[in-house]
Length: 139
Image 1 (cartoon, helix red, strand yellow):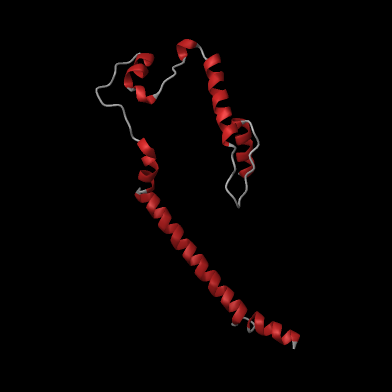
Image 2 (cartoon, rainbow, N blue to C red):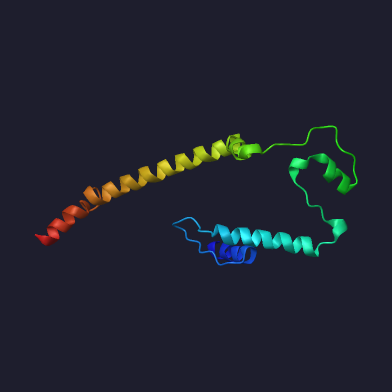
């Protein structure tokens, strides 16, 4: 997956990104902004003028509806993700809460079983433990 992600990042952003399982990916913000602006310029230069709308959502319904040739709706323009609140709202969904609880329970079970097995292996129970075996070898 990391190899594929690296290829996608190279194709999209125009530079090789090093992905690692043990640390977050490092992106060069300057190169990312350059790629974004280069893409926008490419679209503006190559798209047919009658098929291109340069639009800012702060402008509301009117320019968008005029471009699409539809009537302006009677409802206010949606402002769902102002301030990035949609992620917080998404994390509060019951399914996500259930997933977080299941992950916590699974990790607790894994740590508990691993600790027990490690204890039994080192301090006894199976073959009197590694420590006592090592002490017998070196005596």
